[in-house]
Length: 217
Image 1 (cartoon, rainbow, N blue to C red):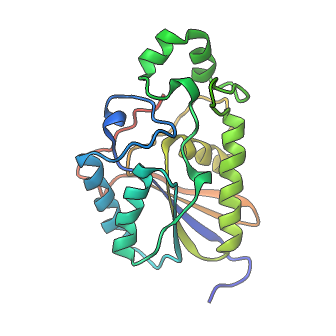
Image 2 (image 1 turned 30 degrees about the vertical axis):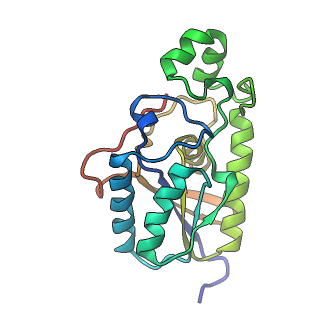
């Protein structure tokens, strides 16, 4: 039984490695699956989480690389994952499918706006701005925190989403340069009470045989 106004704890896990991560190719919402290293990372994260305390629910982005990671966690924790599109990766528009270097060379002005983190820059051809992504992610997390007050839950998601989550918890602006790592299959803990977010731990990789990739700009 939980006590009203008790903090909700949220464990956020970045999906395991994909071939496109290794190539520094922008995936966005293109549905890329895990490579062999990523599958091993997902299993390692699952095993580590299974050794912890009770978890009330498991949520995940519905993109394949997140689903494959969540399914391994689900098997170890005996939970049924619920797939939520609000935890999908950012839509990167015409950058999707290109490497970061290719994007910079092909669309220099747009890449500059992206690289310098202009909060309201919407990436052309179906992309999102950082502010739009923030609205989507913060709304989804708030819904889960309300639904699971006083419980511990897991959310499997993506690097761009975790970039937003870290800033949300620390109160840092969207435009600030990134000063934290987001490795594949790393484990991150937040707590929230009365919509006040606290960053407990970030970027845990002790469960991995090797350090997960952080190929993000």
